[in-house]
Length: 165
Image (cartoon, rainbow, N blue to C red; front, top):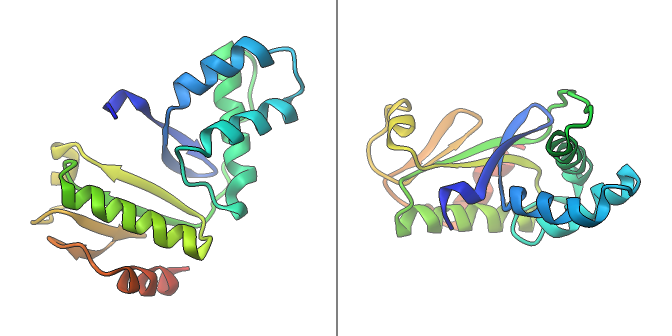
């Protein structure tokens, strides 16, 4: 996956990376521009849920955010509301095997727990440097460094997420 495949959007008051958003919006725009917002939103959620983790509790917020991005793409007016949802989780790492493994494990635990969260994998070295941590990968939950230089067990990740949830 190239860096261009992930677009950062605002979901509620959180910024979240969405895989394949541009392509899906372009595809949906071909057949759904004359449809009702609810139908467009449902189609965007259906297609984007295939490559992105979207918990049941946050589907509505994601749907609104996707519809907003769709309307921006078409040059239509859109709502700009901020609603906070869930946790803020970041994985820091340049995209190495360990970093990708941590991302997968966190996503799996979030899915098992049906936990809403703003999730971001920061791969830009300059951005990672701003956190002042040594050793990759790094797991940050709500601004607190929970792990650096190793991939914690799923049990430990679950324990930390329970603590912050």
